[in-house]
Length: 447
Ligand code: MV4
Image 1 (cartoon, rainbow, N blue to C red):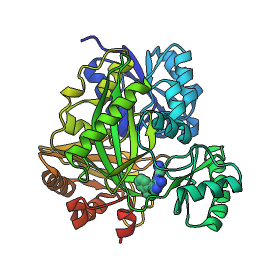
Image 2 (cartoon, rainbow, N blue to C red):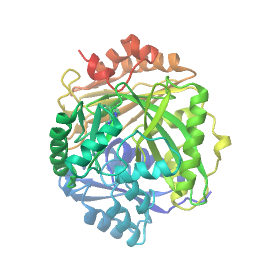
Image 3 (cartoon, rainbow, N blue to C red):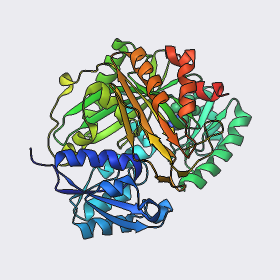
């Protein structure tokens, strides 16, 4: 098969840059790494065919520096840019500029990134497509009178969210009118400070939901395939810690209904590329919250249970090639778990950058380690602290869990503190072993 591109630039760093590079190598695509001065000895730079230093350690000087990245793509003559996760991956202006420069942006159209970037237009779009959403204000809230009137319709408790938000920033709960008026002001200030936009909206606050997200992939020919769900409820301060697929909370009937609804909706949307729909799930009901228009860190567990290489397929669809499989070809088999291992103190979550003095990764059947670190690697202090994704796959959930316990025990990362002990503690808890947890479990149960 001909490679979908000759050469692509990967506008990212760390494990995800390496993950994308691996798919490129297997497909015969040449790779260009860009890096900051803090990442000169990073594995994604060492393994790329070419590399360009694009700026100083701070992300805004390098991985967020659009002009430097476009210049690097220009001088290396690349066909396409893969934005990875985070950084510029959901930046409409970047996607447009890449295309204006005659290259392919490996992601959805700027139009779809834009619609989903605004949480109100995302919800309205989903309502129009027949997806159930969290009950709330159909538009942003304007005046205090407007807010009070809409709050009566929704009913307390209410959650105030930022229109341009995501990641939980600027969210405030209100239990009554007084709290609503006060928290509206605070939410606006926080939204303005974080997103440069003080738009806010309200939703009914769900008290004990799970976070369940659905993976889709679509090509330029109208084919949309849903690849099942992931349960990402175990989070701390809106940072995912432990993810699993499929969700232990869903029956196969619920899963099939959800997948079919999502598949039909995304087909109507005319979306292309990979994407994830985030839902809250409570008492047997799903409520759409947000859509991520990019590859996600936890895409790996979907790959394990479907056998589909999401990055290769993402490259194929970006090049215009039709998907090589249809919905009926997708078989969800077995169970996969991902533990995110961060360079952090497992007790207080303080970052722990520094030199890795000893490194031994686990292996064996059912173990996958996606990591850019190695013996002697210096974890820089400037970026997020993810150092490794430890993924296990088993025929069923108990097997995936037991392989994870064994793999965590084998894993040696010395010289820095890591969250390996946190995961060992997590796996020892009965609620985790039985799958009985909501989005609040981790923060409530941390020692
Ligand atoms: C909610 C919610 C309860 N009710 N919306 C947090 C991040 C942002 N993307 C949405 N979030 C939430 N939205 C309603 N109407 C609870 C959360 C939430 C949460 C969601 C997923 C995973 C972890 C969470 C932790 C705290 C709050």
